[in-house]
Amino acid sequence: WRGYHFYIEHFLHPTPTKLSRTARDCLRGAYVRTNLSPDSHMAEIYLRQALQIVLEKDKLEINDPIVIDILQLLCDNFDWRGSLHDAIMQYKQILELLLQQPQNEGREIEIAKKLGDLYIRVKEYNTAEKYLVWAIVEFTSTSIFTNSSLINKDFIAITDLLASIYAKQRKYDYALTFYLGLLKMIQEKQKIDDFTLKCWEAIINCHLGEIFYDIGKYDEALGWLQKGLSIAKSNSGNKDCDECAGVILNNLGLIHERKGNNELAISLYTNAIEFAEKAQDFIGIEDFARNLNRVQ
Image (tube, rainbow, N blue to C red):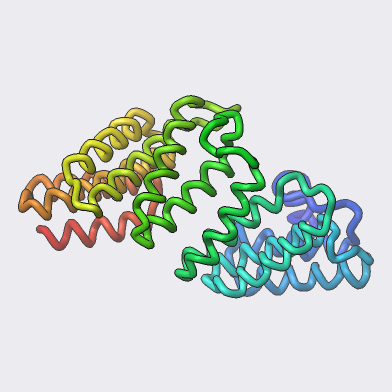
């Protein structure tokens, strides 16, 4: 067992050397129960033991980055288990701790995004909006769509989430403003470091198609969806692009099913399932298969 801990420490999940051996053993135990032999309840036990040890025995302050890392692992565990309100409470504590520190390297923006996402999932859209707007403001105090150098993965994800809130609330003018602005920025700057933006371009086209479909502009919806599908397919092999292609094909299937073109809808749903399988999008596979079975 000690040899297993040695392997994990040196090759899979290094733990902070300033911690006691017991605390580090607990963190490795949590890693095993999260990634190698998943059991969310056992992972939580290990994490809570680690947290108690680093605070009481190792004498770290509650706002120490190592403590915050453990708190975030607990948050991720709650999210994994589906205990969304517990995750929200823990993430809010982390955000408060981060905001008390002079420098946190933008980590507070990441936590605000997670809170926005969680509040969307529990359908508290107004609260989600506040966190996401705050996160965007942290990026810039100027117009967010006039400086493509600001764009990065967090910025895209936060803006996409905010636009999705407006779409869910049927505030389509707001949603379109954000989606079109984000699309313009993505097109102006197609690559940041090793992060390819083509898949995001496809995803935003998909969202635009969904909005135009919802407001009854079906021809425009088809145009956006087809464009997004072309981009996603041309970048097949990327998980995000394959997942996006599956979603768009499913949406196209819904449109053609509505028109009574059942044979075409069946073909689109079948193709959607194939892309979802490539992306290992298990929720998509289930949803698309349900649509396919309904038409057949």
